[in-house]
Amino acid sequence: MDTNYQLTSLFADGGGMMYPLVLCSLIAVGVIIAKAWTLWIAHRGATTVIAQVEEAASVGDLERAAAIASGTPGPAAAILLAGLKRIRGRTLGKGELEQVVATAGAIELSFLERGLVILATIANVAPLMGFLGTVAGMIFAFDSIAAAGTVEPGLVAGGIKVALLTTAAGLAIAIPVNIGYNFFVSRIDKLILDMDESTQKILNIAWDLERDGRLQIVQEAQAGT
Image (cartoon, rainbow, N blue to C red):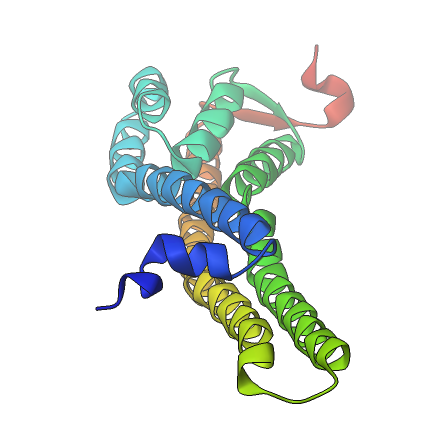
């Protein structure tokens, strides 16, 4: 293979627009690695912690249930822990538990979605940068023609090469970033289902405790008394 087409040569031939494109690719790689690790950790123990917390709470051992939730990372465990902390007080204001788990869920969802806007931006901007490089390359090619006063392949080849390289680089960055973005969105949707299940479990635990007389739900004005 001709050494002129090695990566370093291609980068140099692509012109100044290759620098922001490479920067975009480096940022995207960092975000994708961090996001993949975060979502893997968040989903890893969701099913197990829900079952273990439900088992411990069913026998009235709220302390052990809270310890299990506290020792497990992820949004499902965080919602369970937030609810269990309120239930352990033995007295709840009406609607207080729902508000607590809803707030915990919103915080966890915000954390899960962190970084997605960066990937979405890169997926949209990288092709535009490539097209901008294309336009710049074509301007360079026509400027060479205007300066020479004649059309010769050698005059326009450089500008066309820049145009093609930047377009290819922009698309090469945007395509995998867009795939990664959609994959992460699907994983977050699955985690949202885990969070909904956790919310329902903690509400079921509260209802069971109230039914057995181990939890009192009062009007909010009386909850602090």
